[in-house]
Length: 225
Ligand SMILES: Nc1ncnc2c1ncn2[C@@H]1O[C@H](COP(=O)(O)OP(=O)(O)O)[C@@H](O)[C@H]1O
Ligand SMILES: [Mg+2]
Image 1 (cartoon, rainbow, N blue to C red):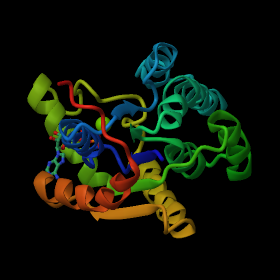
Image 2 (cartoon, rainbow, N blue to C red):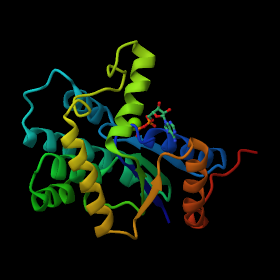
Image 3 (tube, helix red, strand yellow):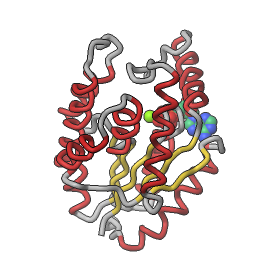
């Protein structure tokens, strides 16, 4: 058996923090686990990530954006995620296909049926076993991210990770948030919604507890004698 876990939510909700903590705890327990992220996670995907998140690319057409995300995802699934799951491993992914529906679908108003077709092609139909939604308002998330940016650069909102998509207007981020709610309502078995305003430690504990039952079917790595 294998396990595919994804992390979703607005920017600044703590996805990368929680994905890393879960990775570290599973790795320490000798579970076969990898942590990857979207867009990126492969050599080709990282190049696409640079194009898609570049603040200077203001002329990027919504169709281009959607196809680039999907192209990066196709590469990640075929090069990294699918092979690792086939070996019986655990894959943790910081954002996945749901982000396309939330950001390009609900956020930018793209046709959802069209997105489903393209996403099915990009993923080969691969869906996560568990998707954590780190629930925080878009405003609060962006504030967290701004604070982080301000600390690291001395300039408000110009943090290391501040990107083209974060810079969109607040109304867009609100549509994304509402879109996530619809995705969750449509597939409540897969989604686990957590209040992202809790402490990092409290969230990590809840995530670990939800994942624990799934670990019974995963074969641990041999301990080197
Ligand atoms: N539960 C939390 N409470 C307070 N701050 C947090 C929490 N989780 C993460 N942070 C901080 O918020 C910022 C964004 O976290 P990050 O994990 O990068 O979010 P994301 O990957 O969702 O954008 C970081 O500075 C991080 O340390
Ligand atoms: Mg992140």
